[in-house]
Length: 201
Image (cartoon, rainbow, N blue to C red; front, side):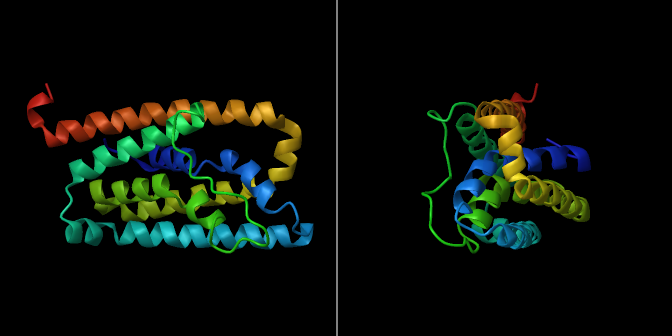
């Protein structure tokens, strides 16, 4: 499955799931003074951006050391994304990476990792870099722009929660889950075709 800047950006925005993280941010920062929230969200988004970029640039070396093929990574990535999609569309059926609520100011964990730069987003950037390494700067730009969107959404968490309400946030989360499931299935099909060329026809 080949990607361009816009399709990569769309996939990243879905797997980063800023709207799904709004309730988590509200919970984590409920006892944090309002003037500190901007700094905290900005810091955690920056940490997540650095982690994703490092993972993207080091993806080829990781694959080489672990003797992994592009096809196996694509199939594994499709499975992970599909499980995440099920968790978004049907919370009782899928996999959730939202850990228990923690007191105090979050530093790196759990907001930057694994809520923003989680297994699904790490798998996605690794897959992009391994499938089309010649477009590394395109993927870096898509990661940076998607993180800007995440940053803006999380900064607006309180306003979004008031305007959309709990049911509105749930509806958007399930819609994103449906889109991600479709992308995951396409990724699985592409990986299977690469692993078993005979079934391409």
